[in-house]
Length: 315
Ligand SMILES: [Fe+2]
Ligand SMILES: [Fe+2]
Image 1 (cartoon, helix red, strand yellow):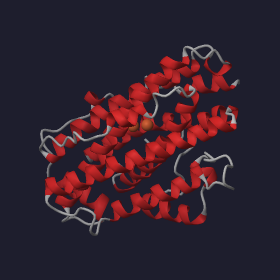
Image 2 (tube, rainbow, N blue to C red; image 1 turned 30 degrees about the vertical axis):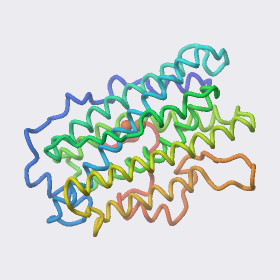
Image 3 (cartoon, protein in one colour; image 1 turned 60 degrees about the vertical axis):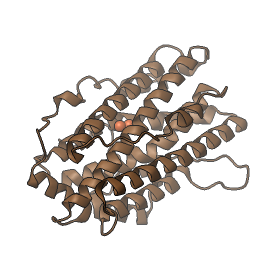
Image 4 (cartoon, rainbow, N blue to C red; image 1 turned 90 degrees about the horizontal axis):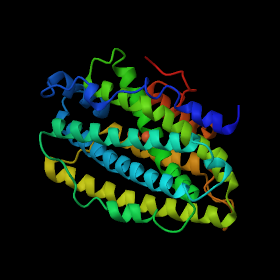
């Protein structure tokens, strides 16, 4: 199988293994059992429902922002690819893979946007979302492949973190009785393909870069991360102000999320071997996993693996 046939195959079942946001069994409101489950997910005990609602609303509203950005940048990349006649973009495999990726992220943003409003009972928007600044990083005259690699390097870490949370939800709620588990499951069906596309970019696209292109990828990645960190701070302040509490106190989900993010960045991106040496490394998170990382994900999600092999998903 050629690399492009492999890429095209990633989305072979994307019209089947997916859940449109409208297909979910949206309730009128979330009852006590659902809110207690959120409290269990984050605080490992019931009784912290308000803190859990603030935490989940903050994280998923922020994720919707990130997904909207991924979708927008992928659209730019696909448009700019038209002027780059290279083997990678010949035929329609790459265009198809990125179209599926972009469309799914926009559906996720829609799904999370709706969920956050239902959960919080209010319009939980963040107008200072730095959207145009974040998109502008990808509007320079860099190769669209450099932009694609920087975007995937950033997105992959978040996609890996939420996969661990999805697995935790399945471990606590194996029958998917709770809406939150159904939501993460619906999201994860698409994410399993996104991570395979990220792996393709890491392994088939990045190695074709010149040193100058790798440096630009690094710069765009670092600038993306800096702006995303600022967006996260704004959402955190917004959530604490809206709900009038510090949802991070005693919140193991929040603490582990930070640990996972730091661990996955270190594993996936690696450290520069020397000033000027190619960076980031861009390894698959499970290939790079160390004992400390494995213990962390196992204790939180009852699985020692972040991304199962293609097709080996639960339920
Ligand atoms: Fe997503
Ligand atoms: Fe994704």
